[in-house]
Each structure stands twice: as C-alpha cells, then as structure tokens.
Length: 283
Image: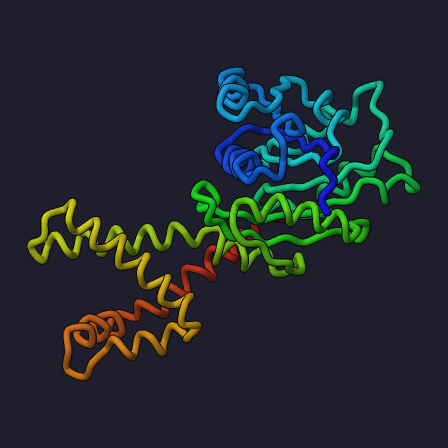
C-alpha cells in the first residue's frame, strides 16, 4: 500500500515535470494537495496551480523542507547550483527521511551523493536515499517508458513509491546504473528516431503522389498498428517483418533498398553514438 500522507515536491516545472504531475493527479492515486512544485518562472507555477490544483512554491528550500519525496526536474547543468542553494542555508537540517528522485539526464547517483552527503553527517545518509530515473517524452501521452536505478540506502518501500509515481505515466523497469547510457540512447532518445522515421514515411508517401495530410494519417496509423501487433502477438520484430515481406513483392523491394544502404547498421551506429554522448555528458 502506498502511504497517502507523503508529500511529493518537484523542483523545476518543465514539460517532463508536467507530464508526471499530470499523470499523478489523473491517476487518482495521488491527491493534488500532496503535490508541490517550485520554479523560478511564476507563469509556470500559476499554470500548475490552475490546471492541476497542486501547491506552487517559489522557494526551493521551503519545498525541500516540507517534502517527503523530492523530484529533481531541472536541467543537469543547473542541479549543483540549485542544490547548493538549499544545502548552504544556515537553517538547513535533515529532520526527517526524504527520498530524492532525479529525472535529470546524464547526472549520476554519485554526483548527487557528492553534493548531498557533504552536508549531512554519515549517520543521517541512510535517511536520504537517491533514485535515478530515465523517462521519455511519451510520458506526456501516458505512454512513457522509464528506467530507474537506486543507491544503497534505498529501501523496498522507497523503490515501490518511486515505481508507483512512474507507473502513472506508463511502464517502468529496474536497471543497474551502468545500463543508463544505453537506456538513454534507446528509450530516452528513441521517440525522436521514430518521429524521424514517420517524417521520412510521410515524405515518401507524398513523393509517391499522396496528399500530405492523408500520408500523415497513413504513416501514423501504420506505426501505431505495427506496434500494437508486435505487442499483442509477442513475436519478434524480424519474424513479423518476414511475414509481410513476400518474395518478389513491394515490401521486399523497399527492404532491399534499406539493406543496400545499410539502414539497419546506421541505426545501430546512431544508437551507439547517442550512448557514447550520454557517457561523455555524465563525466
């Protein structure tokens, strides 16, 4: 059972924060009165109050102090300054257990530990567990895919609470942190690859003589239907591909062009490039 009296505070009110807050409220599991959001942009705070009826707090220190779960949702390059502004307050003190949940790309658990644990004594560190999450933008449509990993102080309850939050936006899987560059490259950046594919399919349809709007519908519904078929049958994608690819047929003609131009190999190279870039950003 998820405790109803735990307050969840979000530092940073960007699009991913809104996706999660909106999903939490829509799920009915989390009451808006138990959700707080802070940001330097007053318009964003007004938006969250008006649309989701959550509490908007322009003070990160106040939000941190009053929250049981603190979600770090600011840009990676802002994290250190934002956290130090909280931790260096003269009246900062860890008075109760808090779960830190980060959705910042490329920011390792160790980086968080190096900041947080410098300002609390060693005996108090188990009261500040840290969970790192890699969500993706389909969370905005409640169809997200998130990966998460935890530091050594995270309890089963902490993990369950984080999982319950993320499950309101879609699916979630547990990983080791060493996998996060791969998760970022495949799932975090993955929606952009599909948008790129759909963009290309639409353009191909137009060049084949179709109206742009109708080509757009055909491409989108085809991708949605193919994903649904893949999920419902449980068959491997290569098996379903071969079922559609009749010898000497139209699909085979297209696949031959893709193979001749090493499309599959280049997609793999692209994902590896994204993973390498994630690794560089995380240093």
